[in-house]
Image 1 (cartoon, helix red, strand yellow):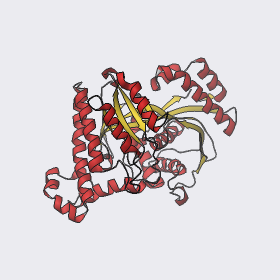
Image 2: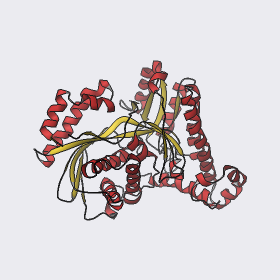
Image 3: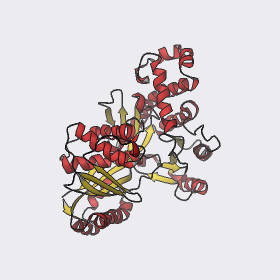
Image 4: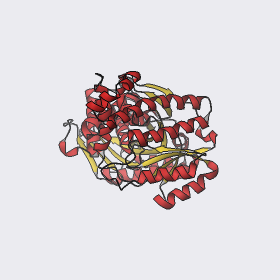
Length: 428
C-alpha cells in the first residue's frame, strides 16, 4: 500500500515507467502517466485524501479466431490488448464495495447481500455483486473496498469492456484480501459466473479468460472447469501488418436475445444427439443427420452448427500457420472465418433491424480495401459493434483515412498485444 499523494509524485517522476512499459507502448507512457494520476485524484475527491491505495489493471481482449465457439466448449485464439481498465483502490472496514467508474454512477454493493438482484440485471452493480459472491462461494476472503476506475476499453467496442471490468474487480479482491493466490483462470471463471448469473448474459468463457490471462493464447474449452491454455509465440509487429479494430458505431445494448440465440440453437442441435454442447457431437454423425436437426430444431441451427465445427478446425489451422511463420495462410483462414460468421453463424446484423447494417458496410469496405493484401472478419459477439482487420503497414494510413471518413475520426484502433492479464500494477 502507498499513500495516494505519494503515488502521484512517483508516477510524475517516472518511477513506475518500467512497470507501465510492460502494459503499454513506449510512445503512450506520457498519456498513461496522466491517466493514472487523474484516477488517483478522482479517488481523493470521492473517498477522501490521505488513504493508502493500490493500483490495478485488466486488459480488453481481441478474439483472433474461434468466433462463437467457447460457449459450446470449442477452441479460440485470443489476446489481451493494450486498451485496459485501471483502478486505484483501498480497503475499507464497512463491508461495502464502492466502485466509481469514470463517466458512470457509483456502483455500491453490500457484502451482506450476495444474491442476484432483479433491479441490477443488465447493469454494472450486478457484476460487482456477482464477483464478490463467487469469491465467497469458492471459499476465498471478501471485504469492503473503495475504488476509482477508468477504462479505455470502450463500451460496445467488441473488446470486452464488461469482461475487463469483471476481471478488474476480481483482481482487486485477489490482492486486497487473498494475497494474490487466486489464479488467472479461476478469476476468469468467477467473472463469467457474475455475467451469467447476476448480470443475465449467457456468455462463454473466452472473453474473461483472455482478459485475465493476457498474452496471445489458444484456449481449448473442452472442459470449461479446466480450460487448456497454450501461449502462442508470434510477434505481429514482425509481419509487416497492424492489428486494427474498427468500431462501426452500432449499438448492441438490446441484442442479448440475439447473442443468446446463437448459443441456444447450437445447444439445441447438440441435444438432437443427446449431448449438451456441440463439442461432444461427432461431426460425421451430425452431417449424416442434418434432416433430423432441421426437423427438430431449425435451419439456422444447422448452419450455426456447421460454423462451430469448421471454426474449431480453423483455430488449429491458424495456430499451425503462425507457428510455421506462414502469415499468408493465417490471413486466408481469418477471411474464411469471417465469411463463415456472416453466412453460417449469421451474427453480422440482427433480423430485428434489417436495414441497419453498419458492420456489413465496414466488412464490405474492408473487402475492397484489403482484398489480396490483408484480412478482415466480424469481431466478438457481432450483430453490432466492431470488426477486426490485419492491415499491411504500407497502406495503414490510407486504410484508416477511408474507414474514418465513413465511421468517424476515432473509429479505427491500432492495437498491441499485451503480455499480461489482470495485474496489480503498484502495491508497495
